Image (cartoon, rainbow, N blue to C red; front, side):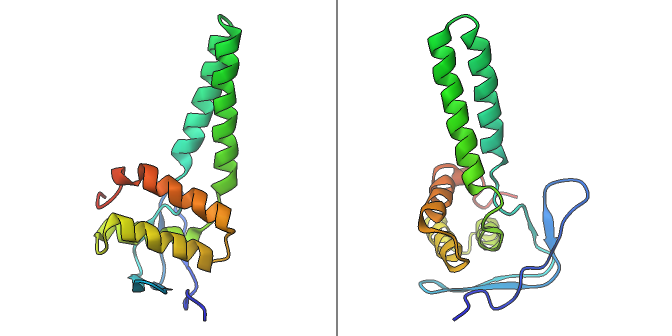
Length: 151
């Protein structure tokens, strides 16, 4: 059974980072039922840009600190490379699941914990490997409280 009965159709903006759905979108969650996203809804898909920013800041800070204290600079730079690797592991994946998740966070029709569980289920239903789905789920569990029910 296809858990996404309709294709994801979105108009990407010329400027800005949000896309607008051109038609309705659905996900049939095996545990929580049907999640509907109406046409016109705005999504930023998977919000991983902050991770990229953190990675570059750590790399720059590592370089700067390394001029004065090489061991600390190397440690900070290594954290930056780790963050960049993590970013590369998740960027560009799960747009359908992220759209469902954005809708659930915007409306708060389900609790944050349940919305994150639906996100994981949608990631897996869209074919993502379990490890990648887990990374993305862990990211929203760690940092999603800033976005839940806030526009």
